[in-house]
Length: 398
Image 1: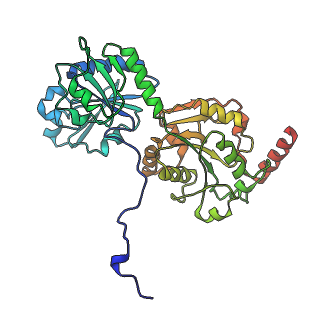
Image 2 (image 1 turned 90 degrees about the horizontal axis):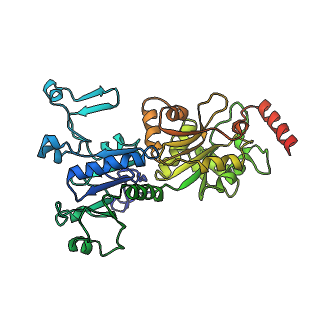
Image 3 (image 1 turned 90 degrees about the vertical axis):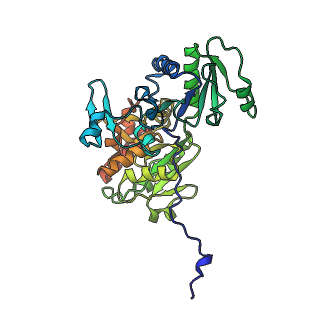
């Protein structure tokens, strides 16, 4: 058969990947602009004690002492010490005892900035120098807004400086196409903090469910997901548990397993192969990097709705994950966990360092660690002997 002419063949240079929903600096970022930089810094300083520790907050600003050059820089927050460039070093990591400082001689591109701030739940940005996809506008006659209207793309809050009673006509006209955002006074710090917490809460990612059923079950010598301890097999039973809390539930399987799933289950084929549970979690994030994933292994026949409800109701979206503490070794249990979107990059980072253990990523990350209400429910079943004992115990309970 003759090949099709090149003109009729649609060629794709890059894979069609779903990209994380990130701004210039992070997933949840807001620029504060319209007042002198000192007033913006003072506002951030007043807000921080009211936002932490519930939220991890980063602040992006320019090094005002360095002059005009710093205002054009994308460094966070200041340029490197002069002696670094003099000595030819490209980077310097300094342990300042109370914090760590990384000085770089190279400019930070728009891909590096959100990577460096990936552990932060909220990024507050000095909008006089840098852009962010959402904004808080301060109305202050000392900083007219008429030359910064192009930065006001999604205004969420307006703050009136002392002595300011009305919105400038130029700002009112610029915002006339949409409902006017809330208006507070700059001195109302508590109300501003409450607004930011609510703003963050409204942007909490949707929770999707993932049943990990792509293992080879070598110790069990038969597919653990197909075993039946309840009215349904474990893939169906676990998916039904997740469906009470998640609008969408997928079953993580190897590509050759998809056709064997029971009717009604939605397969999610592994795209990261040979990595065990990590491969299933990464494949879920590749499919939807903007969702949080409630992950359950398929070999947990004792797990109940009450324990899942405890996990979901105590979810902390500002952390990388919410996990139960294992009753056997007190480490996080990665296969009964809610993985937030920013854990995607963290898991890939550990993979790039040669680690395929999702538990290691949890241990070394900012997570919410919960005590399980019924520790025995986290017991998994891996061998024929454990299966026989679990079946007998569940029959006795019934």
